[in-house]
Image (cartoon, rainbow, N blue to C red; front, side):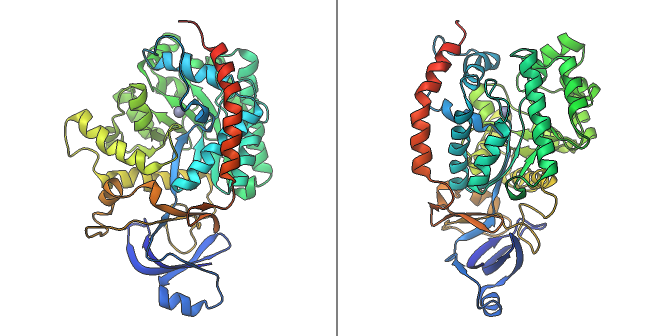
Length: 451
Ligand SMILES: [Zn+2]
């Protein structure tokens, strides 16, 4: 396929904006780029997708999300409102994830995948929990991802909160799915596996060790760290150590690991995150919603930590997350110089692409260059002021919007064209979700602990 008359944003180093360019896509990768007349002349028989002057960028990447959370939208929490994050877990997420059966897991994932295609997010790193439907849950999500045509990294959140049997079942689910992905390409190689752990505060030393022993060499652990200070207090109580020290002692953290949040880590823990080479995922919308504080992203970056951007189950609209980060760090530090938009490019474009690429190493992700994967989006953005490489990040923060995404492509296959979904039936997925949710909410209400 030849995509013509596009304004290319390469997100290369350095980034380039190329006017009226064309992109030749073959076998799922970008095989050439050049001025439209040249490439059109050289490839007269290619199917044409005329971008008509729209912006053509690599698809957005989400470093940390929860497909299982979609049914929480509009759900009432009974009794008094949760007073802090541990209360949010007890009153919202834990009773909700217990209420999901296998078909709910599928339905919830599909709702998120529709959202991702519409909003131009082409790779998602998911962290799944469904304590009453653990076995095979990652296959169900993989099947949904396969149908969608998107790219994803999946894992199951191991936790001791529901007893030993479910902790072991979670561990086994990760192991089984990691082995499946090693044995065969899942979803045509568009699905990879990580090893999920919920958080230090719901994992005993025995469970951490059991997961370490179970995880094959080279597995990537994906875990929430210090989202709230309660996680640190719990770790100090259990082990006399802060969380990052504790996880290191159990050999959980290395250059493959994904640490979500890292809000309440201290200076030494930040150093350890840098020394181990972990990925740290930042989720500003979720952090604001839960009132848990703000990660010290500037310090983490200055120490050399590879900070990425996730959405923690908020909408799969990653520029919303850019905008939130852009604003949050300014008000938090009372300093309008904080979190400039070009820093967000480092986090959400460069680091997210490197993280996603570590799971799909055969070809580069998140960049437009010959040989890179054709995971692309078209954006119908009409700039009313000049745009160049230097100010593009500020155009994204102040002008781009996910509603302007008109086409989404993964590995050369169009998943949406002219805002029409081509792989998923949105009306059917929406109807099915709305049909399933009342029973989920009813079970949720029975599962919520009394105040
Ligand atoms: Zn999370």
